[in-house]
Image: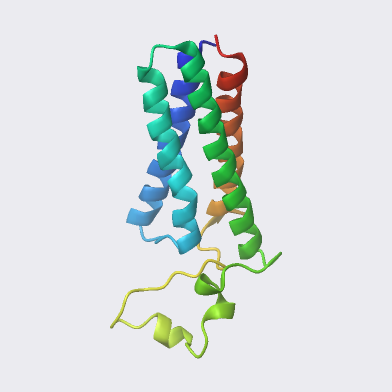
Length: 155
């Protein structure tokens, strides 16, 4: 596969994952703070992909592909961490988990008078026992491998 094709596939993968996240958001699954953290590396990879497709120098394309791989490995790691927080394998950030809410109760959080707080340690949707964070970790890792292929062996 050509270097540009690998970069296009990897960039398209991030676009597809962001589109999926935005779709779930529009149908009633608002993102938590950690969900937003997972999106930023995808946005970065999309910009990197566009730049890599524009620049003419193969070496620069491969360097950018390496940065794309780094971005996708980062979001995969965040997704894995987030999935672990959801499964209660380890604690998450106190700012968005049940452990950091102080004296607030569910009624306070679901009040119609303020914004809805989405908890990072709650699974809002899962498929085959894997949450959205888990699927992001899996698909992002696979896309990172495409970026890595472009960085190492792209022609």
